Image (tube, rainbow, N blue to C red; front, side):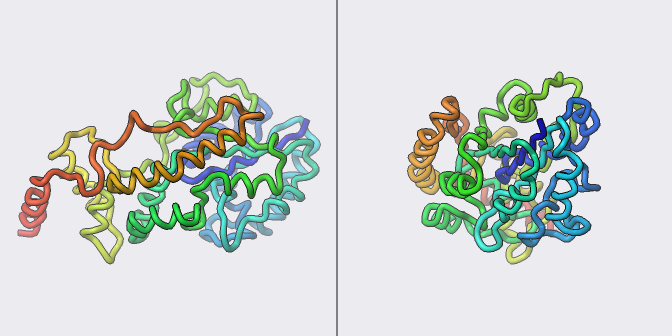
Length: 328
């Protein structure tokens, strides 16, 4: 049976790790009839959405996204293989949405088409988006991120209210064609999110057979509060990696090596929880008939120890002395 599975992210849910790992193991996976197309130097399949949204030209494919998808269909739709396509950009929203209906139509010669989507508790997701933006620009302030996401359910073209995402998916796919995975639970399960995905795909490969890339963790985010502090010091410019690292060292010297930090203040953190927890429960009820075990797990045991504004008073004079001495 020819089958195609779209892994649509979401963003900051180990998508790069998944893509790097599947690309590095493409030959092994193919022996198990799981096809992960390798499209050159980039492990993710962002080129399959460039017809609809503007991305870095490095992702663009010869002939465009539609033609590349048609070639895949011609090559694999009459086989007994599962084709696995992975790009978090499939889940973008707003102006220039990816046309999922057209993609489904192009892939219609496959006997089945499915969607896998990984979801993460909102404060963690929003914090990771902030950290990712910080690598290339001065990001919006945390208060703006909180208010905007609560007001609209969307931030920067990404769904934060996941019910809105499922609404969009169900306009194209049947509910039973969609599988939702919880990021926190998948990450901490035996074998991690790669093993969970292989299980969903019906592929039996021993964990030690798979090559790890970047130790099994690609595109790891820096310490949240260090990134925020570096942004404050560097504005209006982009905070360079060395400054983020320096700020992390300063915070660790005051609060301990394993300190968990957060770019949100405690009140902002509580606002996000109060708003999105009921929406997550709504999603749980919605998926109950199809996925009785699915829920977006709370990270309550892993709450940050230091929120924005919570650095101890002695930290600031110490940090000021450090940077002044560095300039002398």
